[in-house]
Amino acid sequence: MYYADIKKWDVANGPGVRVSLFVSGCTHRCKGCFNEEAWDFHYGNPFTGETEDEILKELEKSYYHGFTLLGGEPFEHENQKVLAPFLKRVREKFPGISIWCYSGYVFDKEILADMLPKWEETKEMLRYIDVLVDGRFVEELKQVNLLFRGSANQRLIDVKKSMVKGSVVLWEQPEYVHVEVKENPNAVGIPPEVSGK
Image (cartoon, rainbow, N blue to C red; front, side):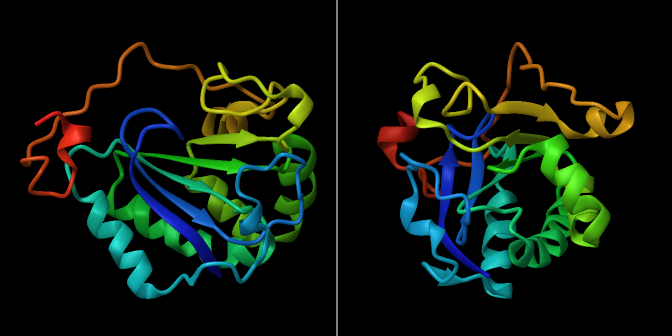
């Protein structure tokens, strides 16, 4: 698997401060996609053990609230083969953080109905993902004021509750996310224009 980018201090792709991994490879090719170069499965850099370790090391910092997977498309099967064991490492090392994933595939109609019966990796990924933002980006439904998504057809799905209930349960935003920074933000690499210090 290749990846397009690793974003640190990301506040756009889930609640709180997050580390976000943008994987490469996507067959959806949505019109108006913000990350078109990542359609190519070999765009960017190879995702290696060193890359995994870099992300895990970054997540050790106290101000991170979660980890987010985007793309490209994390649920392309060849990406699932790499991401499933990596998500297991993330969850085992950081049981308290939230794991979000963005996928153009529709949760109930494509991921559960088609992928889950075929691939063990799909079951493994869903075991570790807390919230799935599903559905292809539809340029005609784009709204800039939507919470954590780009077009009105996309849903914020509580994966664990949905799996227990057997139907889609939407994620509800908590009233408040508290982030405590124990380190000196400048010492851990947060630029002063971001930290305000």
